[in-house]
Length: 639
Image (tube, rainbow, N blue to C red; front, top):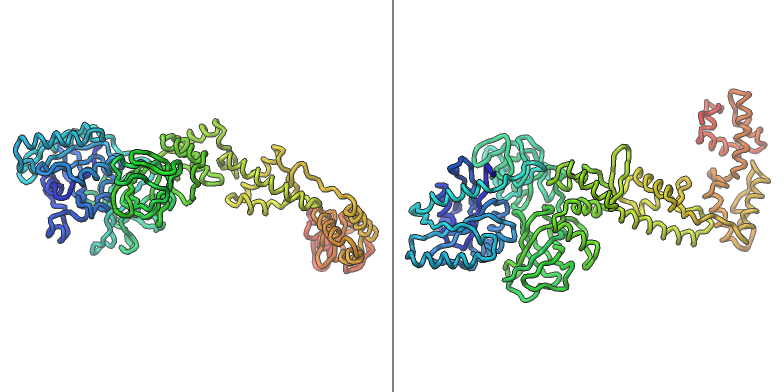
């Protein structure tokens, strides 16, 4: 049962919506001079009243004229109940039809039909109008809605209408106050002594004075200084209430209708919207083609874009399809939000539906995996929503990340969905620094296939090299993962026998470095020369240049020996064979068994070399911790 409710109005221009609201609330919602002068509503109007049960009802007065349909759309998004207003002296008119179509597209299911100006026609005519209205509503969400006859200026039928509203409110489900708060902004203005004020209907959650919030799109961070609900100062606003917020330190020019105030980190704006779309049976076009330019409406926002058909070549009125809506400006919305589509020109309503996800990725048409997933989401499967987040992230997410992206679900529910996906073998679980992370298995498989293909080509091209560095592979394929996540990935792949990790190099299990022919000859020559002159090694470039043939092959072999650390580069063109390094370290250990300190000259003499070669080698041992500097001497290190 709803303790408070938001009532919206709909109907053709001059059918008496504003007059009806005044009769219900004793408030005139036409506040602009132009509205008074012209006698029609241009902007949204708001009022409230108490029902006999003590429930409070907010009511939104929307414009009926087709020129102000944008404003009408901004007002009907958060309603619980609609009053479809039809004047008895005119009956169903063009905007009645369009408003009814919009109500259905926005998922409004509860309403009351109000026949206004019932005192201006004969009783027999009123009966005929009511029958015509019933026929008009056949097959719509308001097919079984009660019809109430009123004469607003005389107060006739108003008590009966109020009682009908109260009865309906008894049956309405209360809005959930769990999850993140979200309020689409429908008005922005400045109040003397307070600063910037924004108003809207709080769609979800609970908002408290002093809360930090963010305004999307744009990511502007604000703090709530004051809250009013229906003109009364309160400390807390709850889902389903008309709310005004004082947000200091923000200029009016930075905000506009269509922005959304929400909890930080819970709503990410986007240009690319995947959605379930229905083309109205009465849409004024023969066919809808891919890429049609459109006007998009959701919440209080409007944006221009194009409609791309993901599973159809074209559509005819009455059909449904999966689509991607690509907008010129981002909007802040999420899964499950209803939306309306109008043609860019002429501005007529052609359809709408439910958003399935909001992001920045252009989707290919007729992608089987995407279409399957979107159909699951359209069916309302929560595990599909969780999987979509993981698939779209292209990386690892924690349960907390998933809950932020799906604020309509609690953490226990998120964990339940994760377990369902693990059991279905759609995602894998990882533990990074004590925190459980989750990854789409198909993404992981794609990474493994891409890296394996790259390594296959690399091994074929550079057969004398061990493999590719982890960091290069991370930047090329795993750039959305942290270093520790990459390490975990490669560790699991090695345990599975798919890859071999040797130090910082990664190779396929089938690859080994083998020297044949001229390559074998060069390896033997390099090792022979370096072992023969163990502590006075030759100059590599001289060795290679001294042989006028096969210099390219010699360079490849040398690079291979360095990569495998058979040869170790010390800088300034000096290299040592690893056996020389091992021998020198053995000499050092024997020396330190008998002595406390070593001078550079002592080391030079111990290995029978010159300072040119002994100092780079000694500094290398410093870097490894084998030795440690102590003034001009070396002492045993803490290797």
